[in-house]
Length: 64
Length: 310
Image (cartoon, rainbow over all chains, first blue to last red; front, top):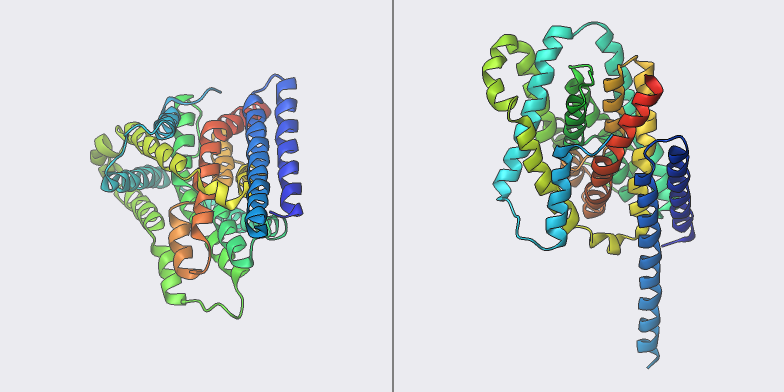
């Protein structure tokens, strides 16, 4: 996972949030996009967190 | 616009898989349902083509082909630069997103018919046309001197894969047979929504069973699988305006632009680009984009297009 991928993910989340909010403001269905934005943010955070924890464990194992 | 009852079967299949409930269709039945949907859509389009076909269709078909060829050109650099994927994988996924999903199209048809929104009845012709150009563009994008291409086998897969063959074949048969086709309609017409519901039930199960693969491929592919359909739908809406489609036709073209292939393109790519990661492309199109379009995309595109075009 590189910095560009993170940039794209942040852009996607903000885009979905922005579109969803705009739709809600004009009385249109925006909750779907907002929910997807939240889901993507969760997936992005959890997978990155998992990768960090995984590499820490690998470092500790190789250190011993 | 609320979720259609047919599309809700997708949710049922997905929930069953999440809770590890034992719903599993025989593999043969799933393939039979796919064949049924392709023939039913093709026949219906063929009959309409015989009734409404005119010279304007040539111009519309040209724009549709151009539209199909353009989508991978937008997807490719995003996958390459932002996703950090290699050239072959980027081209393969881009081809999936330029081509179309017949199941997503079927769901959009069901939504239009349930809401009594009229559309160009010969639309299946456009579906068949959209299957092919993206594959060719994908192969061009992937081409490099080190990778040899079995042209004969590749062309066979592009033009004679199950999706293209059955859709185009039944379209021609429906066009040629005209009124004679009515005797097939108790089967291919009346049963359409029931079969689509069964198909979506299984699709929900299959899509959810692949969710774990997202861990392996990272969250970029999940974001791409959601943003690309939105962009495709926007481009589809613009193309529909260019060829003067009705509100229903615009919703269908937006849906097709948003959809990604998981039948025709994977078959062609596995032959033409054997080194590409096919699991990655199918996970993106089937596990992310298909559910997004069925559950969020189609109701959203429909509401927006109806509001802005009415």
